[in-house]
Length: 153
Image (cartoon, rainbow, N blue to C red):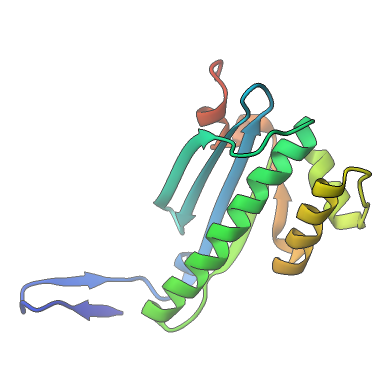
């Protein structure tokens, strides 16, 4: 789809089908004082957005840090789905990728953690994404890991 600017020579081209209709959202965090969140968003094979920053929330465990990173990824994924949908005419599908297998399993099995804030975040994730689009990836394949860890191979 082509969006024209004020000049006839200026336009933006947006892919509308195939691999380009997928948003891949890699989320990761490092647990520590302070925790660090990182995120990569790819539209098909093109890097669309990324960030790495300190967590605004104090986390009590690796699971809560990774969950908060996924909450951030879900927020950005939902926003980009609507934004891109307005431009190209359909919402792309979001695929969320995390290297924390415990988080992925807990979300898919419906396990509710003891920590209240963590259970609220997990409920938010379950309500806002199709859990079949949440995938575990090994740490070596987790692209966002490069922004959270100082020792990356």
